[in-house]
Image 1: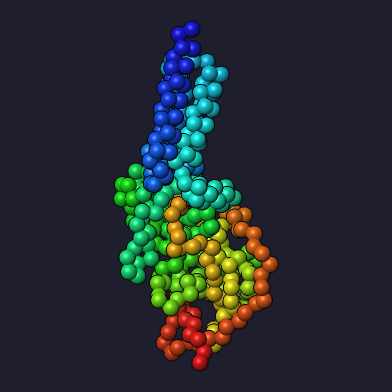
Image 2: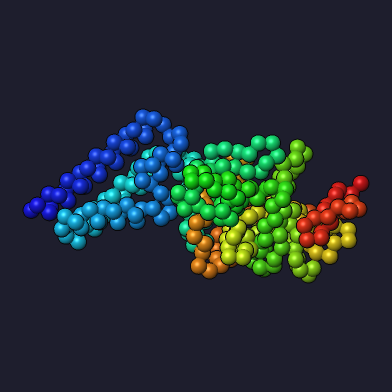
Length: 312
């Protein structure tokens, strides 16, 4: 009888605490939603098992039966889910849901985070509210519900800095779906007259591109800084550069880099290459558009390919 009573006391305390936090969240609004949810013990994609284990340990020391432990674990997990959802705005919750779909398709273990600062001037960086204390390390991939955001460049105990894939110095190895042809994309950088489109260069001179082709990250060495299979963008225009032996194109990234809020740091890479499992469905592409450009003398892109310049 004593064991049952102790179990009920633990469950009652958990219920009261969770309900109180939910009520507080409705009173205070949803600002800093992910930070509040994390402070309340809610870690997205992988934290729930730790809470359940803690409760199991508490009940186990009081001699609770296995059925009581299982019931209590289930109740706590549900309370944690309810609490997390209550503290998130509708937009954040929708973004988390989309990120869960990508993480599930790619078999990534992702730590959710909020963007708390943006790099000034021409810096293509953002700061997240997670750090080494949360398990974040440099050179880890960052994504959101649309696709690739960038990678972690530096980490403190509570925050980290992310270099965005749109940075002018960014070079991301990619694979074209479904052919698997390899290439790389470079970021447009932050320029006043820029289109925000990435530039794609293929490795194989025989590679064929068309508008509507989708790109995902190709494998990096030891999965750093980019894990494979993360959606990058879609080809919008083919580019013919005089003197170039390989195909090239302009790429519209899936991610809206001007509206970043909820992102995820891939803290555990997939066990195997997911290839194109996370590629989103697209409507039928429009007609292919080809732009012919002429390279300026002495102007080169990474890998020796001339940088495109509009023809007169």
